[in-house]
Image (cartoon, rainbow, N blue to C red):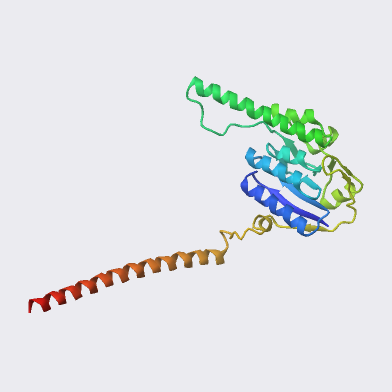
Length: 265
C-alpha cells in the first residue's frame, strides 16, 4: 500500500506536525511507501530542517511529489524534495528560489548592517551546504541545487528532470508508482522499489494534522461548545464562591451584633 498525504502551504510548525503524523500513520498501516504531495512557497528554516530529519528517519521510502499541476516547491521546499528517497514532480510545476531571506527589522546603524551581512552570509552558506549534502547523498545535481540557494535559480519539472535534480516526472500518482517499479533508492534507505499495482490510500491534511494529538479543531462546533461550557461553568463557580463568602461574612456579623446586644442586657 502507498500512503498519500497532501503537504500544502507554508513550511512551519503545523506542516512539521502533519509530516510526523503522516509518517506515524503510514508505519502503523504498514505502507510500502509514503507519498507527500508537496505544494509550498517556502517557510521557516527551522521547521524545514526538522522535516528533513523526519523524512530521513522515516522507516519507509518517502516520495516527495510536487503536485498538482501549477504547484511549486519554492524556497524551503527545495531541501524537502532533495531529502526524499524519490524526488518527483508533476508536469507544469516548478522548483527553486531557495535563497534565504531576512525577515527581521531593517538595520539602523552601520554595526547592525554589518551584523545583518554576517547573518545573511552564514545563512546562505548553511543553505548551500544542506542542499549539496542532500543532493549528493541521493545522486542528484548538487550544482543546480546550489544555484537555487545562491542565485535563486528556479526550473520547471522537465528542466529539473533533464538536469538530474529530480528522479521522475509523472502526471498522477498511479503513473508515478508504475514508473517507480524497479527504481533503485539511493542513500541510507537504499533498496529496489516494487510499486506496480500498489493500492493508494489517501489521507486528508486535516486528519494527519490532528492525528494522535488529542487537539481540537478550533472550527469544530462541538469543541467550541465544550470550551464555552467550561468557561461558563468556571465563571459560575467563581460567582457562587464569591456569593457564598459574602453571605458567610454577613451571617458572622449578624451573630456578633446579637452577642453584643445580649451582653448589654
